[in-house]
Image 1 (cartoon, rainbow, N blue to C red):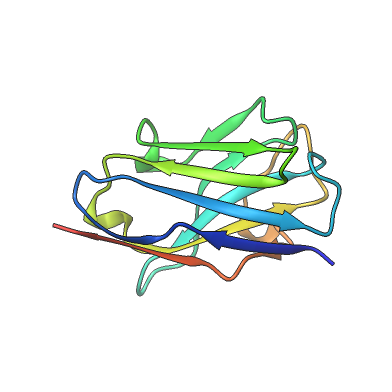
Image 2: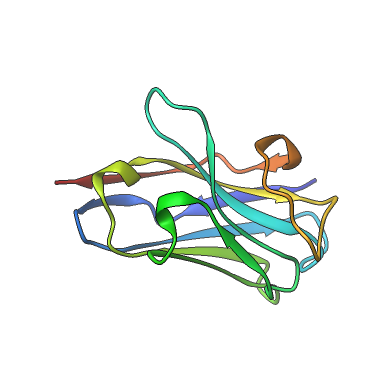
Length: 126
């Protein structure tokens, strides 16, 4: 059974940094696309960053480009999201997700990811 557990969330001030981690189990490490999503209060869940199975291709959505970095360690079956220059609008619950149907080339829709963690809260104050 696929299991994803996020950690690393917290409260920071504008301009601060956080590093999220997602420990995965229950499937072959390095075989699937992984992604980070977030849901802000009153908003729909949205994609943030995606990485392919080998970690050779990444994709960032919207305003996080040049501030967030997604990476993975397949030996540890762990996904990361380094978040720098945080802004109040980054405040949200952050989720990691796995798409076991895609590996080398990822798709980025919420519905494409079949496995989700419980989320970790990130709060950025001004």
